[in-house]
Image 1: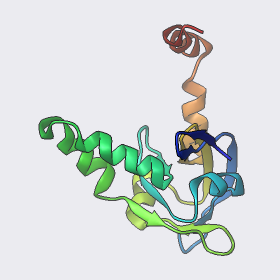
Image 2: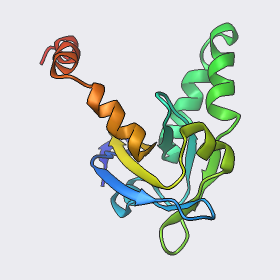
Image 3: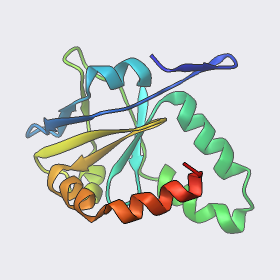
Image 4: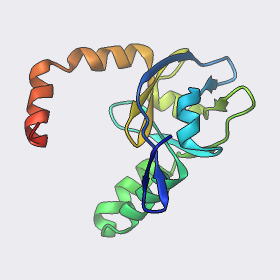
Length: 150
């Protein structure tokens, strides 16, 4: 499970899992992720051509942060994250139905990768995920680590 912060349990989503989307647009959510995401969670457009998968707690945090911004800055984010978002509930086999518009946005057709990204999961087309990782050089990682002072 995740870490307890105050009265909230924050998800600690880690790991990478390969799955396939069936012809009806359903995909199995890894059981480790389902434990932290809960019985109902949210899928929305993410960055770099993936989908973000958020627990209700993280979804609420995102909404609060965006709504606290001045409308001049928030309106684009509101439209991006909320207009196409879907509330999903896994079936007994652990599958969720991904709406067509979200599958199209992320280029999801068959082979996908579920990726843990700390407080959210990301859902990638498997080939796009491999390409993204190929671009992550050790120098880029080292630069980012300098920012963290690691």
